[in-house]
Image (cartoon, rainbow, N blue to C red):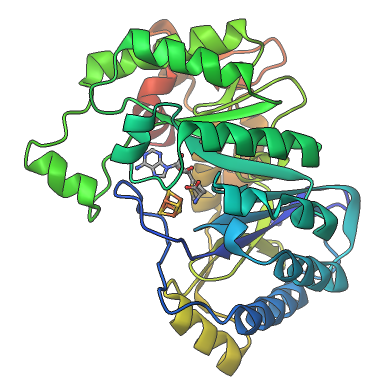
Length: 387
Ligand SMILES: C[S@@+](CC[C@H](N)C(=O)[O-])C[C@H]1O[C@@H](n2cnc3c(N)ncnc32)[C@H](O)[C@@H]1O
Ligand code: SF4
């Protein structure tokens, strides 16, 4: 099956900045602390090189979204962000209404750079607030207080057209009452978007060791489910329903960048440990770059890119990925697109069973979507449909 790219098909660029001031004990993102400092100018040159190499593979695509993720991209100098945006604009046409998001940690030092990021072209920030409870922030290893985070949110609101912030819930000792109060307070400061993640215990993190040793009591499955349901109820009432399992927005406030992933469109992954999906000669290609920042840098300087995975996906793999990503969205998927990608049809018997169980539904325009009660068992639903 050959995939066609029209000029209006969304195309995103993800730029990974892999450095943080300190490592949070729950986080397994590709993020590193460098006490000796980072040669930022040298890294920025390498980003420009990798952008050029990637654009040569998928020339002429119009960039609809750019996302600086991390790590902590707000530790970058605004001039570095501007240089990377220039490199992108030099190699691809950029849509006039492009969404340019930068992830920021809500400390006062970083908030001081917001004006510079706006001048560089960033028009949306996503702040890692995580909690509005000082004791919880301390336990999460965060370097900011709740008040500092709220101050950063206010500065974000003053500088950017759009902003979002992240919260982590289902934390140790969290009750339904305390989460409800914290979430209502957060909603009073929210713009058009909020991300809320249930705390997950990731292997090889300090939290994993603590949890295994019985020193980190997180909510059991029933309480976690109640916290999830409560989150949905409060956010719907506040006008920010979930458009994806962990992401809430006012209508029109959805993060366009993330929609590119979940709707199965193409994105270029730039920087250490970045993943990409590109359509080349009608085939979807999965890319991945070297994770260790300094090794990535040397690879780019020697070979023009940090690619370590560059793999054509089969039609079946492309379709399964489409299902896995698309069913995370409240809007669900178009079964016809699944069929066009894979040459297979979704099994009507399996859909009927899942529908009877209340896990999926079909909309009046024929889309298949997971229901609110199906979301907590999404992995099982997808496995069932893809099998
Ligand atoms: C790359 S980080 C965000 C940017 C920035 N470095 C920060 O921490 O503020 C992306 C988000 O993932 C979430 N996250 C990371 N590890 C998590 C975990 N183990 N459980 C739940 N959420 C997690 C946090 O909410 C975090 O803000
Ligand atoms: S949560 Fe953010 S600040 Fe903390 S280690 Fe991960 S990427 Fe860095």
